[in-house]
Amino acid sequence: MAIIQLDANAPDFTRRYPNLADPRLGAATLACSDDFFAEMSRMLNPDPAVFIVGKYDTNGKWMDGWESRRKRVSGYDWCVLKLARAGVIKGVDIDTSHFTGNYPPAASLEAAYVADGAPDAQTQWQEILPSVNLQGNSHHYHEIKTTQAFTHLRLNIYPDGGVARLRVYGQPQTNWDIADRTELFDLISVENGGYVVAAANQHFGLASNMLMPGRGVNMGDGWETRRRREPGNDWCIIALAHPGIVEKIEVDTCHFKGNFPDACSIQAAHVTGGTDTSLVTQAMFWPVLLSEQKLQMDHQHYYADQIKSLGPITHIRFNIVPDGGVSRLRLWSRLT
Image (cartoon, rainbow, N blue to C red; front, side):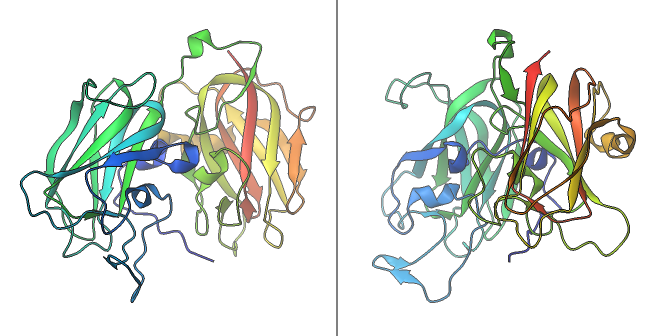
């Protein structure tokens, strides 16, 4: 079982917004100038980059990322990718993990909005990150200050080399004004813009995994805390993408068998103003949306009649008793 290494130096946008370059949400690399040593699609792998000693392929050392050959002509290399969905980009991480003597000295990012299809020769690209210096085996976090939504990115590396991972954190674009008010939406789904504000512990699995689409593929694809050895229980606070009235809840313990929580409960509130940090203390005193419910291993639990009437809410505190793992959490709600 892998221990999740959270980068303590990562800025807030990495925790608040989903990665719009995640292939599990539909992102994909479309084209590049060259990927002789390592194919471009590896750069979007949601797992941390790895280095495998002694692993080679027909073109040389196998590397976990995108790597072009050594350039012997003028110019620079580039890679175009489609974001999972249109969104306002808040920040990026250009990660050169395990690339030491073969990383690019610099990189820049351009973005475009293409309503249908893929970018072509007529596409207007807008620079969102001017050329920045890169170091080997490092994360490079950069805040992006734009209010415009984009669908595609072009990563330029100068002049060549390898990038392990590209993460693009942003707010998915959803036009709630035209949404059907009679329809139920999973308002904590990352696809709709829900995000994790804070979590008590994420030792074996990130809490944000619970907001991903589909069912978990294995025990690592969920939120799992360490074994709790002190009084109390584990929890996480989640912000809804839009205020809503909850009508149906799903708690899925898929793949969690000897380590599922004994029970769970949900508190909720309609929050205006304040900061994400201030919510951690406030959430302890929020009213109960779903009273404590016993859980089963590897099972989808559905609740409707058990949901308390609290009116419109913007945030929830999901409590697991006392610890363990949950694969997915859904909050089917009506827009307000």
